[in-house]
Image (cartoon, rainbow, N blue to C red; front, side, top):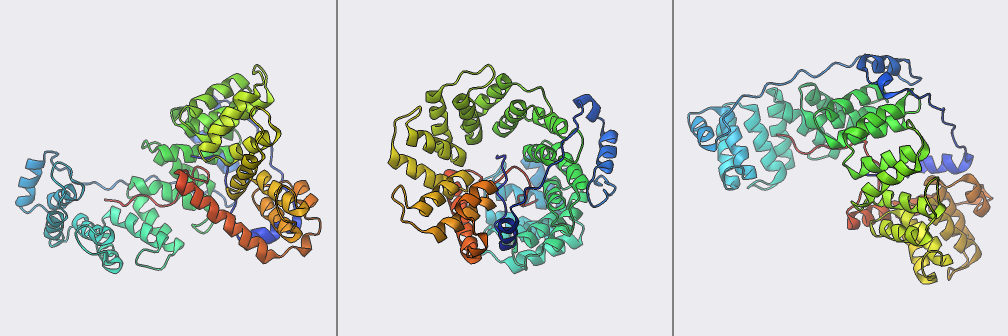
Length: 464
């Protein structure tokens, strides 16, 4: 997963951004030791005292739904189903759906779902809904799937709640409605549907639930993390790292990162914490250790971070431009925009690698299309002055500078290219922003990477 969040490219943000060029200050955190923050009751008190809005609400742990105990042995399960046990009939239906212990057979699965559904069994009705959603032996029928999901939900089957939440979030068979989706997700999570914990947390964190509530977001992320959900562990760590209004937030993140230290994302973030001394004693040696571990797994951000240390030299680390270029090349290969940009600058100058202006321009373009603000500024500058084979086009240069600002470029960089901000065509800025966002999504899909940040989750997998 990733560490830098790409901003939402919406017209309001663009107009507000380039009209003001204001960088909001961040409060300096006061750090506590891990021992100080490991106590859950103290954490709740810390969160309650944090300067956030709204006032934290009480977190009530889920009341777990008790699923029936059924035999694991497929022969015993079949015998029980053949006696007319509706729960066994449903379970046997899912065995045929997924080919667990039997050959995958959607027709047989549907037969058992119908048997269970005829007895008003919520699990079996949910299975029929899944059949019409996923096309398990029948034509996909969103309206019929929703009808069955609602029927299963009316019988109190928690997985159906989660499936309805997912349907309303995605707009499957219904009009998309975040408010309704959240209520179904919350109902499922309160019944112990673990795949929905992340979704509830994400709604609270993003404010799509109606208002931002980081306390409840953290509690649901933590609950998901304690089930062994690696995505939730990383999400929780990410939330804490970015929550500078919570004292000791880096230490809180560190606890969870250490539980997940085999993942390349966590290794990368641990390197970042050590490199900058956030919640730990600053150490370039430790930073390099974690960056290299993540780099061995071809994690682009870590490859770029390690390359940057090699390129600049750090305490205890000798400068090595050739090795830096090697790691920037690896980062670029693995879809990292920063790696592309830095490799472009080194290739253009012939530092650590052979000078190659054509390759450099291709790398600048690729990095810009992935939203790297420095690369966007570089391309904008080329249009402004008509250099490096670009036609002179000051209007496009200024619009690209605005796009760069929306991706995090400094105001000084932007003003140097677009001093007359009011003259920039806002519609052109929006269109260019959308173009680059589409490029990000397309390149990411081709490379098999996620261009966003960790966390803030979206839709859980379809529930049983």
